[in-house]
Amino acid sequence: MKKIENSNNFFLENGYSIIEKVFSTEYCDHVINSANTINDGNSDFSPLMNPHTKSNIFLELMSDNKILQFIEEYFDGSAIGLQTEFFFMPPKTKGFTPHQDNTYVQADENSFVSAWVALTDVNEENGGLIIWPKSHIEKKLNTFENLSYENHNQDPNARSRTTDIPVKYKAYSPTIAKGSVLMIDSWLVHASNNNISKDFRHALLCTYIKKGANFRPGNTAKRKSFGLL
Ligand SMILES: O=C(O)CCC(=O)C(=O)O
Image 1 (cartoon, rainbow, N blue to C red):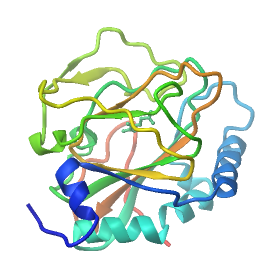
Image 2: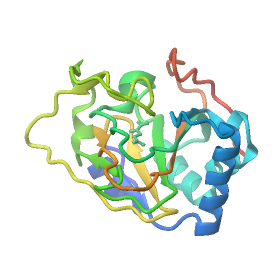
Image 3: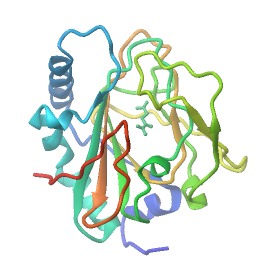
């Protein structure tokens, strides 16, 4: 395993890391307002795919120095953007089933990472993420069809399959403060809780690829790499 002399060691060992308070409350609210403007009063709150193509604020957020420093140290090279997805997650929305992002992206090893930005305080009740620390060590795990397929206001691929997780890995549902960022290894198994609260759970998923690395564009996400600011 690659040795890095700082906080990235925790990420390498555990497959995740939380960068606390990267964005202010005001900035998070500004991002949410921009997403609401793009959604234009629509009563369908399915996630917005690639909102960075509609408003520069998403590209600006994604180009944050603290996040980029973390990622470029991990890549040992330059990072470029791959995808953004904004989640409204209104009350009663079901969460994602357990998955590994690289099952879909099929990127080269150590060349792809996700930054999941909490735009509201998140917890087990309101749709916060569930992670299986250290499960990234397994690389690609088997998946199977999820029979209780239901995904109103959700990504079309959120609940169609699930992952066979070895029992030695234990689920952990971190509380994440508004403006903090969960960094996710491309093979870390993760999911999200159902939102059983009375509030929307806003979050922005940003994915990054190492410059020059291979990846699969995908039929729903339509990934196309792009430069950061
Ligand atoms: O925001 C969520 O509920 C889950 C997002 C996620 O896991 C993903 O897009 O890979």
